[in-house]
Length: 271
Ligand code: NAD
Image (cartoon, helix red, strand yellow):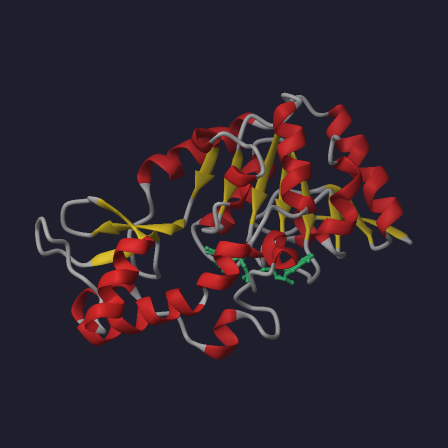
C-alpha cells in the first residue's frame, strides 16, 4: 500500500512527494531506488536499530524509561547516591550490552559504508554496534557518546568498565578517579550534559554534504540530534524515515516506512 500527498508545513521545507510505504516489499524497492540515485547517503540511527540485538530502546513499551526515569547530569555530578544508582543501572544492563551483536540494520549500513555510498554513520546510540558491524571507529559519529567505557569528568582519563565494576563491587560505591578525584561516568551524554562539539560539527558537515539522509530507528524527540533530518531536507537532500512508530517529522520526509528495521534492511546486507 502506498499513499502520496504533497505537504507543506509552516516553518518546514516542503517535502514535495510524501509517501508512506507500509508494506516491506514496497519500502525496500523505494529505498533501493533512492539509494541508487544518491551520491552521498548519510545514515542517522537511534535505539530502534538495536532492539533486535537485545538492547531495549527508551520509549517503546518495555523500554528503559518505562522502568527508570533517566538521571540528569547535574544530579550525577552533585550526588554520590545518584552516581551509585547510575552505575548500578549500567551494570544491570551489562548482560544485554556485552552479548549484543550487530543486527541486520547495522550490517546493511556497514555494507553501504563499505561500498563507498555512505561516508560515515551518525548515531544517537551508545552501544558500539556500528563499530562492531565494520564501520571504522573514526567514521561512527557518536552524538550521545558510548557506554562501553568510562571517562573521568575531571581530567578526561579513560577507564574500562571492568575497572569500575571491580571497585564498585568491592566498595558498593561508584569510584572516583585515582588521578584527580573527579567523578567517573560512562562515556555517554546525559540530559543536561554538553553535547560533544567535534561530533556535532562533523554530523552537521556530513548532513549538509549528503543528498540522501536515512533516519532509522529514532523517535526524533531528543534535541539537538533531532534537528539533523530537517537540516538535511533544508539543504536539498531526500529524507527517509524508517521507524515502527510515526515521528513528528514524517510529513517532511520523502519516504516514510513504518515497519521493522531488520526486515526492511535485510536485503541491503552485502554478503
Ligand atoms: P527512542 O527510544 O526514543 O526511539 C526508538 C524508536 O525506535 C521508537 O520510536 C520505536 O518505535 C522504534 N523502534 C524500536 N524497535 C524498532 C524496530 N525493530 N524497527 C523499527 N522501529 C523500531 O530512541 P532514540 O530516538 O534513539 O533516542 C533516545 C536516546 O536513547 C538516544 O539518545 C540514545 O542515546 C539512547 N538509547 C540508546 C540505546 C542504544 O545505544 N542501543 C538504547 C536505548 C536508548
